[in-house]
Amino acid sequence: MPPTTSPVQAVAQAPATTRHWWTLATVALAQLMVVLDSTVVNIALPSAQADLGFTNAERQWIITAYSLAFGSLLLLGGRLSDLMGRKRTFIIGMIGFAAASALGGAANSFGLLVGARALQGAFGALLAPTALAVLTTTFTIPKERARAFGVFGAIAGAGGAVGLLLGGFLTQDLSWRWSLYINVFIALFAIVGAALFVTSVKRSGPRPKLDIPGTVLVSGALFSLVYGFSNAETDGWGSPLTWGFLAAAVVLLVAFVFWQRRAAHPLLPLAIVLDRNRGAAFISVLIAGAGMFGIFLFVTYYMQTTLHFTPIQTGLGFLPMIAMLVTSAQLSTNIFLPRFGPKLMVPFGMTLGAIGMLYLTHLDQHSTYAADILPPLLILGFAMGSIMPASIQTATLGVDRAFAGVASATVNTSQQVGGSLGTALLNTLAATAAADYLASHLPPTPSVVTDAAVHSYSVAYLWGALFFAVGAVISALLFRRRGRVAVPVAHDSAAELRSPEPAIAH
Image (tube, rainbow, N blue to C red; front, side, top):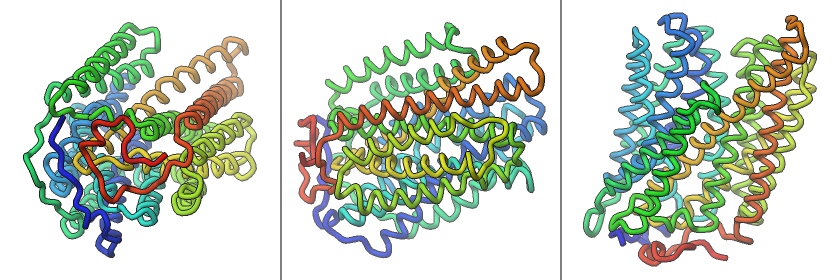
């Protein structure tokens, strides 16, 4: 059993101060930067391609390089934050992410841009779980923890939409390079905030060791998983490379689990994920991530290619959803979650998500924003505000402080894998639907081509609704009834690691 540090009761019992809320602001900046980066770059990608002259086949690597590094190194980044200290790790992650962003913004070749994106992903994998771990260990009083996670969950859900708006503005009015440079300015504020407000906690007892074999196994598994899904998106599900990497991911994950059961210093103690509430939370984050992909990608394409919105208009079109998400997140964490628990809140949000996705399936060439797009976006915003804060808070609840980083990394990993899975599945299903529609409506006139695209989006929305419906059933079955949302004051980390269901009351 790995050596751990016991939480200091005085810290656990201390109410939040002004310093804590400034810590929340700092963590929120870091989370916003990591989450919005992918959508900002997506909007800027056509301009970058025209400037640097890379091909359509090469284009995918601007996104894939980031997601591969980010997804495969998340658990390692989370564990390093546990071992090195969260304040130090947070600042290193911010500096590295900012430097990689500046390098990408100044890139004069395709290779340099891809390398910078991979570096962004690596430092993002260090930063994202550390930010959540800082939040988890800073806010321990139930009411204050609820407020903090409401803000964090809202940013986790809305960051992609904010990225669409910011990316449209920067690309249209400045340059695609500013979609990367903007991270430098965000990072400067976050680094100053971390230096001033994030507290360093001195370690007592022997220094834990890093599980090298476990790190290699799980990093290889996550790399294979993300690459397999990315390859399915570009080459299809019939590609041997796709199934080869996905099979390798399964083998490596099984080997990782077996190793964690016998390792003296496990990278991810299995008690963290085998807890019933936490397991349900991780699955909910994964499913919500897969379902949300359909909202941002296909609604963006629909508004720009079918309704001919500009990038800025498209970003503005998502603002009401963001406002609804933030409102829902605050209501959920401060009022509904303490009263009803995740067993009711998460299935409720998943059900709303399915309804919102089904609503989108009726869009056609003649739909309008106010009557046809705005209502489902508001529904989906309320849905994500009900799912994400409740799931993220439950996923990190009751974890010993010594493992808060790796538990937080598991949340980020779930969201990343969900997004990759959604990308691969929904893109493939949409492309197949478009091809079938064109084959049955010959000749392919411009109107037929537009109808085929709209039909393909509807198919993607329908499958997105299915994701949410499955998530509603799974979360309703797995979450404990009346699970409480408070961190225990006195906590026995050794008991937690021995028990498969620690630290959450029945």
